[in-house]
Image (cartoon, rainbow, N blue to C red; front, top):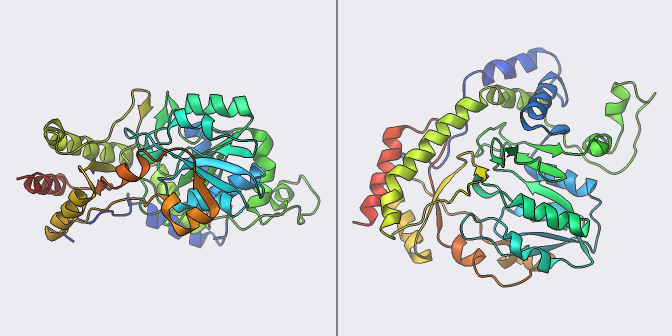
Amino acid sequence: MRIPFNKPPFVGPEIDYVRAAVESGRICGDGQFNQKCHAWLREHTGTAKALLTTSCTHALEMAAFLADIKPGDEVIMPSFTFVSTADAFAMRGAKCVFVDIRPDTMNLDERLVESAITAKTRAIVPVHYAGVSCEMDAINAIAQKYSLFVIEDAAQGMMATYKGRSLGTLGDFGCYSYHETKNYSMGEGGALLIRDPKYADRAEIIREKGTNRCQFHRGEVDKYTWVELGSSYLPSELNAAYLLAELEEANKIFDNRMASWNAYRERLLPLEQRGLIELPKIPAECKHNAHMFYIKMPDLQGRTKMIAHLVKNEILAVFHYVPLHSAPAGKLHGEFRGEDRFTTSESNRLLRLPMYYGLKRDDLDYVCDKVWEFFG
């Protein structure tokens, strides 16, 4: 392809940092680079505790551990999301309760959450699609009313805010992704953000295979041992070193992506004004992070033709999630509660355009030219 859908971010110092990690003689988890990333996340998000993980999937699994999700519990979430949102809770034996989305942001419709709650409900999992926040005040108010956990799937949300607060810090737990397709990357990786310090020690135990190894290294216990169930959720120093280089240039990456996002919007807005496509909507209280730029075609047939047209012109554009409630595992481990007014129909229309750090303006203009060309 002349223009790929994604290129992993690379700002320059990553190689030097990885080399420094190798030369330090310690490349397993929780060395100096892990700790520096933890410190950066605490400072820049305001969270009480931040822990790097091997993926956002594992961050969600840790959150499910910390929330004591058990067989028979119910967890409310959108169906329009990546499978990890559901997997983390289904693996604990919970039922995934899918509710409809808002067509403007593609986020969980906060107005439908309360009617989906039963005596078995344990948590709400809002997913901040495209780095645009869900309506968190309403969701948190419902959670408080029914004594539920709020676990933010902020995989796409780092450096985005809701009413000035970082996504991932608005619920009890927040989960970031550092996959190569995200704004900031370590290849594969993630982070768990914890609002209440009372969960910090247990989070470290779960992350260290169920042992109190972290407390032992701090001199808080005289020997470390198996305390409870857990797993190996620590990323290596090599991954953390790569990520640290990008965290230190977070604003540079943010500004570059935002310039591309704004350029897409400027070039394609006339098509929306003519009623040919729809562009992303950003609520006034939200500051997004330019994670993606998508357009909505009139229907599935139009989207399929647009993808083919762009591929013919050596541009890789993709659609996104197939709603989980329509998948075999979704039918087995969950149910859609309420009416599917928008989840399926809106997901069938959505098309993601190439978006990455360092996207050249000439390439972006070429993409826009071909979108215009499609409509004659």
